[in-house]
Length: 408
Image (cartoon, rainbow, N blue to C red; front, side, top):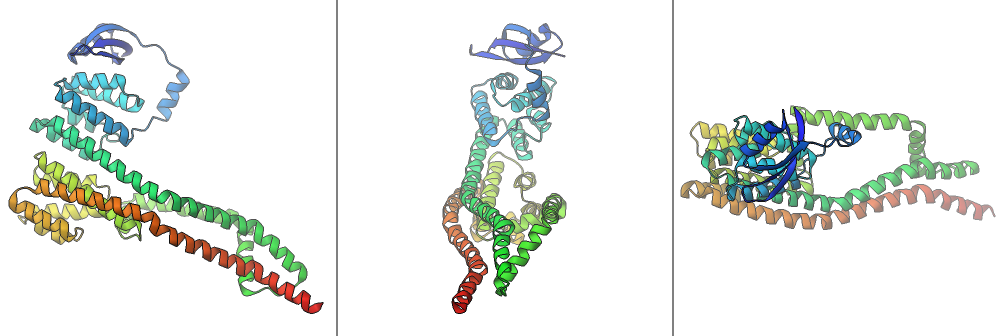
């Protein structure tokens, strides 16, 4: 298979440029025409910088949420305009700036050319397209509502990105302050306290208890810093491995919902994500049991996932969705009430969308208050650190001054 560079025209006369793999130039032209493109010029692709290509293979460009948002919007526009899927994917592969996504779309287009449906072609790239993304695309294909599904996916991904950006923005200042405090403590333990300890030792005075504690901690840090670094690194690596295990991931995801200050934000964001995804699945015509399975795995929280899969088991036994949701222990009264009313009226997707909007507003409000709630705590932490240093460092100086004056 050789790589060819092409220029072509779309069904509406728009210019399309890109690269395509094929056995020959004629085969490349045939593939382009199958995708609804009219070839204008086809030739061997120019060799690019080998070092750059090697780096791209070793360190592939990450496909982020903004890339998927743009792709979903473009697919919505193209499918609404009646552009064939193969033509749309081939054109996007040639114009997408993200090289990893461009390569992925080329492979997806190739899978379509081999006779696979779009969902199956996307599912071959789980690092780019999540299970929920693929599942909704499959529903859109089978129900003939693919353009609506892409529009819903673009809206959902944009809302998710906004929430994550808000949380990161709220935590950026506290994390910066905590990092500065940690660095300051290391500098004080390694350099400041030993210098004062040498001065005090020269006078031979008996040091106060707070100072002796500081000096002991400093001596231990200076003498065993290699061991401390190894223990810290081992703890971080061990924690990462534990969190990646099934049991560790379950316990960590459960703990995240109960963390002070941040926990309520994660909980509300999780409820907003569930209600919006489940409403999308229901409005797209996904069967109830299938929708619960797909949404549970798309929440990125093992604890909530197991609870929702427990709801699915209850529905399979013939229980109502509202009853199983109440028994899961993860939903508040508002969600339970909306689910019960939606079941009775047959408008569960509309009501859950309203609940999702409500929780999105709650997340915005809670995140806005997060920085204001964290700042007093940081002030107290810094104050305690200054107090400890003042007691440990300046008390002996006061005692030495008193002793000098008395001696004089």
